[in-house]
Image 1 (tube, helix red, strand yellow):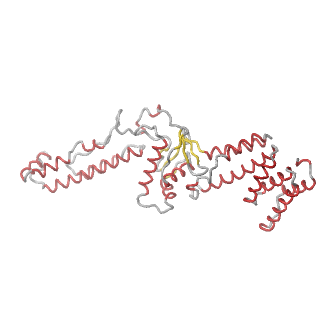
Image 2 (cartoon, rainbow, N blue to C red):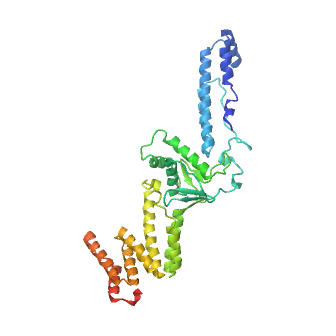
Image 3 (cartoon, rainbow, N blue to C red):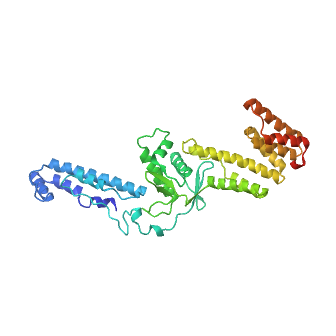
Length: 379
């Protein structure tokens, strides 16, 4: 339904012109004509002009509502209270606007009233990359995700894909707990923009299928989106399973495919947000374990020197990770550097004792003994 339909019962410009165009007698005639003769001579021009102003205000209220409905794809029809408010503000003699009726062709059609929705073609798959600054591709084509806060809103939604994120949580995260009065309006604008970007082929006034409304919040439908963070977890699991099956080459391929997805910190735009930071920590820990798994696979396929170069920087950046230290020492030994392998173990043992007051793990202690004995199992 177009906003012009709200005005179809009353022509405000015509009424005002009639009131002001004639003299007092002409005005009384207009009064009688407009009110069916029931109030002729008993109501002043000022009263009628006041009613015209109130009708205009009611009309603007309805225009605003329908504009928001068309822009935001609301999932339910406008409440009757909106029309009742317009009736009260317009006065007893005004003609109340009619609620919009669903139409088979054109006009506002609400999601649950559209019988063809189930037969609509599914939207194109949207691929999100959040292991670094957020990016999105549709059909292999990169799309512009807009300004900083709009991108941050999308990042937060991707971090909870398949789960609704309330408006309150989004506002809290985007404005650091100090939202301006315009925060809700701005958020609605961000959501409307993102819907246009993520579903460029969606027909006008069709309900969104990628970024959906759920209660007083929004969710990304996990049936039509793909997230690189999820693919990374799949690669990590497949890599460790391949190592357990003694298939180091397969493990190496999986680990490298997973690590290639990283371009920076996970969920960089909102990494400090309360609802996102636990996932950021989990992904970083998983990334470190995958780096170690890749180095274990390199050692297993005989790429000892490559593993040494990788682990030298890794153990310096993460000196307390004992599995990394174990792999570094083993790679050095298999590369023919027995003294360096022992030195790595002893430096680590001293650091643990001085900084933490604990001994090295049993695995590191056994490795030191085996290196000293040049045990055949190390080859």
